[in-house]
Image (cartoon, rainbow, N blue to C red; front, side, top):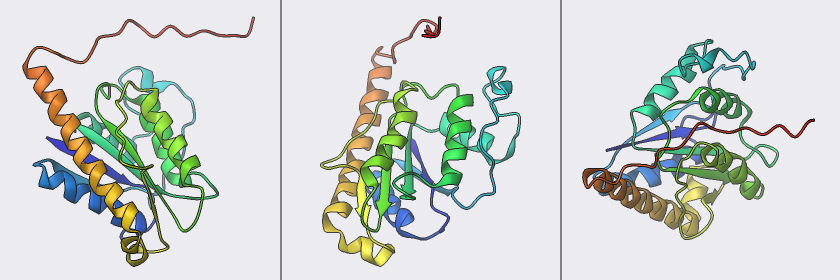
Length: 205
């Protein structure tokens, strides 16, 4: 069992990485393998809406986006962490997620969670944006004792956010529990539900 954690910060070892590391440690304690992948510092363009990914579930631009799709497909869960930029997610991370989730196939049933990190404010708006990627993809969203947020301008300050650190640990425990429940269900003949083809309604007459 494995969880992929995407670090949406441009800083390899900043506050976002600190928060994700606490979640990863909690997952490791429950026997779940983890990988933290820093993506916020990549030179990646956004989605150009070419539609090429509809053929095989992979982006025609290639680059790190297809690597991320592959890693998510081969993982049992996903956690995406982002610093707050103007009450939103990191711009590079948004470009990546737009392409990953537009092209994605095989994410259904994988538990997912969002983590937002800020000096002061904008975390709830950021979490809302991140969670929408999961909620449109049939991915169970994992919660904690409070909204998944940590405050601090750097890793040392984040450690002083006692409630935030505890929230990250509980998030890891909750995700580990859900992954184990899903795997147990599969072993006992309870797979993730199958769904009919997506019916899309256009309100423009």
